[in-house]
Length: 90
Image 1 (cartoon, one colour):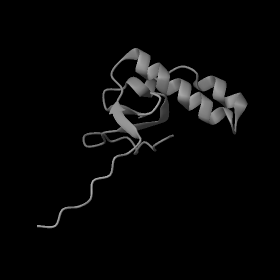
Image 2 (cartoon, rainbow, N blue to C red; image 1 turned 180 degrees about the horizontal axis):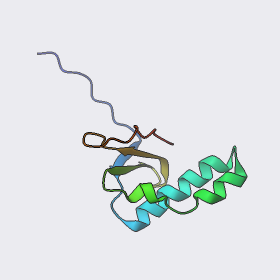
Image 3 (cartoon, helix red, strand yellow; image 1 turned 120 degrees about the vertical axis):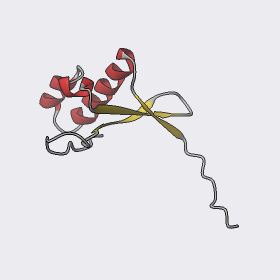
């Protein structure tokens, strides 16, 4: 049987469950936008209402090396929703 090679990535991805982690994600989102649209970035300093929706998952990517988060993504389970798909943000 052929086994696929195992790759060890320098980061972890997890679903945000705590208010502190949700704030980390919001801070990271603000920092990412601050590079390109500083005026808009300040509006993103706090979690959005959609971040805590019942059909929303916020993903936090954290470096294994220094425990600093690297990316934040938001997705929504659209299985039972009639709303348009939610785009992922980083």
